Length: 280
Image 1 (cartoon, rainbow, N blue to C red):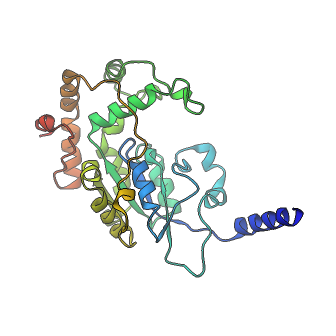
Image 2 (cartoon, one colour; image 1 turned 180 degrees about the horizontal axis):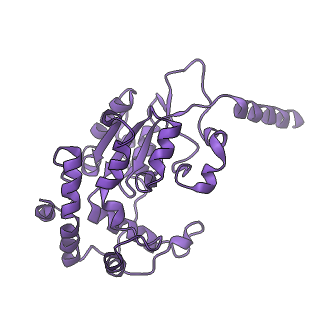
Image 3 (cartoon, rainbow, N blue to C red; image 1 turned 60 degrees about the horizontal axis):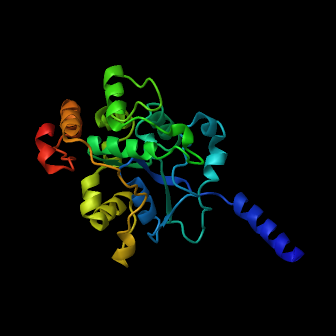
């Protein structure tokens, strides 16, 4: 019995002392754009090793950032001398949104590759509100509970025109151009892959394999029923009111035009096909 405890203690100390893998790429976001599914599916790739968990929040959370690079490194798998081609990665969706994050990531990992999944900003906003509306008695996230209706939350944000509270970013997180621009100013564009959430939904395996090619690992193979699983879904109590949906698509139209100009090509994010005209 004591021998087993000694072995486990020795093994744990040995693992902690071994050099750690450094992330080769980051999934930056966007929030509510399928990053949980993407993180889980990529973890099945034989050349990829996931960190201890999704959403490490090292580069956006000052308290965690102050713990330093050694603490951050401890979140990743030990490096294997007999498998140097293995790659690890991180996925924290709010890295796309917060302005101070790009500089921190670039300072630590200037050669990293970046993956960004963009979603219809109206649907993204509604999904984020739906999540927060269910946090009332959550053991970890009760402080993020939003008791307002979606319409009340959106009206408040439109009136304020600024991020006055932690619960006033439903629309701001969907203004993608300035968020991407901050990364384009620091990283070469060939190191940034922008993925359409619609593609991740309609052709999950093909889209994941495009990401695998981008980060330099073999394509996913095997049982597609496993690969095409669904992750982190939440039920909706009701759909978005059509009038509100149309209003928000009009709100995002000039912001989306700026995004397409930044990317240099069209990007049709709209999930509700009749609403497509509002992005043109």
